[in-house]
Image (cartoon, protein in one colour):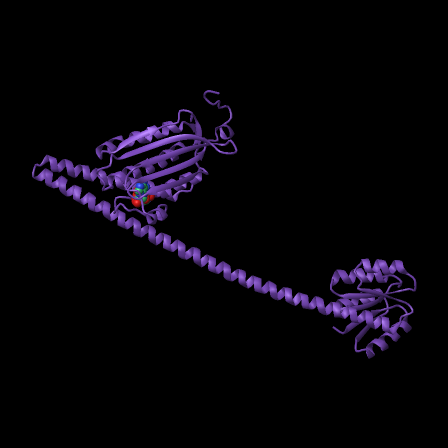
Length: 400
Ligand SMILES: Nc1ncnc2c1ncn2[C@@H]1O[C@H](COP(=O)(O)OP(=O)(O)O)[C@@H](O)[C@H]1O
Ligand SMILES: [Mg+2]
């Protein structure tokens, strides 16, 4: 860092400087013109340069510019003629660290050189710090990324493990059901017992239905998809879904009713998706009545729709499925949307609410639940009606 290049075309000055600065402990290299100076600079890369401004051919400003373009951190001190402020300013503008005027006073020069050296030392230190900091940041980032990848990997493994375990359990149940049904069918035929045959056949059918439900639930769960929206009537979707459960509800003495908002009209929704949401919620509600041990109740499931308006005058559709069945404990409520969580002892896939939530999220909607053990449960789904904003062009809304 004590290597100092001095460029001056006046030999006596050059010699004088060489002597005085060598005695100050600098390792002095000299050049008699700009061209030579630049050549030496490129070869020896001194950090300190002292150059005269007025020189033939390549002048000090040009030397300064080229040195700065080669090594921006080299400190260049220029020597200007007495009163030549223009050159001094030009030199500073081009990144000179200092200027001294002729005639050169030793103290001024030594001071300027000291300042330049301090600057070099500081920028070196700063660079070291930054480099260390960068290395540290890089190392931390790498560690973090590895940790994150590890986490994702273990979580995914756990997910696959859970999925397979849950599935195996459920399929085993279905197989047991199927075997039981087949046994009854066989025995019924062999012993000519039509009642047994009929019951066995119903059992086989039920379990085939369960396999197909499971396959559909799994497919829905694994597929990321955007809702395929069309203009449709939410009340109609509700009526159709409810119709599918009429028989099962009646069979278990559950009253199944609807309260539909006549002002609801049309909405822009994924019809199949919402149909599915309703099927899941209604089947759970009926199950909650079937599993209820309080036989003194008149079990009831009500499916409601309502057009709501929020503060921004946005229209929201509310679907509400209420039952007065078992209700649920806080523990069950926190696990509702967990994969394969089911309290139905092998009769549920535990995927229904998960799929329901997924569909509602894909719609940008919300689902919430209120429940009281022994009293019953209400699931509320809110979706934007959004009919005007998102309607395909050319569609005219009925009644407007
Ligand atoms: N209306 C409800 N009343 C009481 N419990 C419910 C209701 N809906 C859902 N649950 C609880 O949430 C669990 C998960 O529901 P779901 O994801 O549909 O799976 P599954 O119906 O296959 O068990 C159910 O097993 C049940 O314990
Ligand atoms: Mg369910």
